[in-house]
Image 1 (cartoon, rainbow, N blue to C red):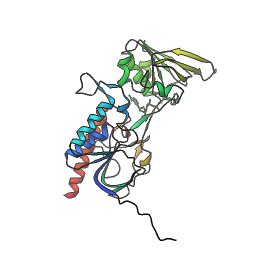
Image 2 (image 1 turned 120 degrees about the vertical axis):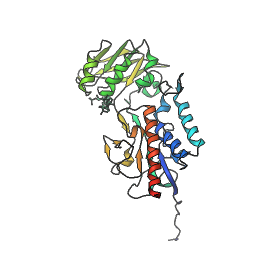
Image 3 (image 1 turned 45 degrees about the horizontal axis):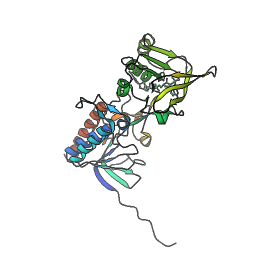
Image 4 (image 1 turned 45 degrees about the vertical axis):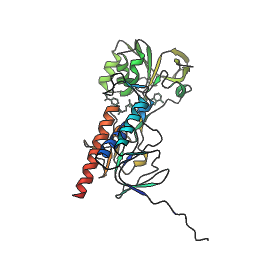
Amino acid sequence: MSGLSISKAPSKHVRVLILGAGPAGLSAALYAARADLQPLVLTGLQLGGQVSLTNTIENYPGFPEGVGGTELGELFQKQAERFGAKVELDSAQSVDLSVRPFKVPTDNGEYSAETLIVSTGANPNLLNVPGEAGLTGRGISYCATCDGWFFKDKQVVVVGGGDSALEEGLFLTRFATSVTIFHRRDSLRAGAILQKRALNHPKIKFVWNTVVTEAIGTEKLTAVKLKNVLTGEESVFLTDGLFIFIGHTPNTQIFAGQLEMENGYIKVDERMHTSVPGVFAAGEAADSHFKQVITSAGMGAAAAIEATRFLEQEVG
Ligand code: NAP
């Protein structure tokens, strides 16, 4: 034995560590920075969060002409950095919330944090069919509220049978001439009221026991390939838009067993406190309901205000 040991870099200590750099994380960073807490934001793998996947955001106040998703993310970051927030391209590998300061080993090192704000977001589930990745943003969307406007006077299809599919499908009737909902079974998962509204809507048509097996198009989506799961019969359906609402998966796996959750979403009270004192959560990691840029930003601001109060109370 040589007696040599590999020395591990000492963990860097921060007062506020924010995981995730979407609207929730960067709004939390802005507020924590303005409280002079010099927060550190770890971006995770998807810089800017889901908002950066959206072409144009027309429902975030202050931008009457709309704003690009990536551009809005950059503006959030710039504003937080102006007050001293640091943003690093790094991902938490795990967390130890059993004792404070919390320990967070990352791809590039390790942090110890007096408070933690979890804003790791959620990702829409993909169909994982040929053509889907290449045509996303070019006819394929996972957000009717964001992209419905682009389908004015067009025909669109929706995949899914839950509350999201029906709610977003109903929203799309404001723009589209017709909304055809393909569901893999012959009964809906969505709640009764939404079902009633969608089933009775003159612009909405349901096609049961049917799955989309391919998205077709070169520059833009032009059609979807379908398969009837009972008969095996295949067909092609011409369409301008494909909206996929088959559930979201919150990015909360590393908190399992440490933070209380419900269906994978971190449970927070009305002040963004999680089940562990000193840990706060904001945005889609903790929100299965609203899922909007503005609501995530609001949750992020609230989480940072509460983290600030938490640290102040400790000093006494
Ligand atoms: P969800 O309830 O999990 O529904 C997902 C739907 O997609 C289901 O109908 C499912 O079919 C279908 N699906 C899943 N994987 C599929 C695949 N690979 N191919 C085709 N279809 C697939 O998800 P959600 O609608 O996003 O709702 C998530 C949560 O938010 C729910 O708790 C919901 O109640 C809540 N939410 C509430 C509201 C509201 O109250 N206004 C609005 C939106 C969401 P099966 O039914 O066969 O499983």
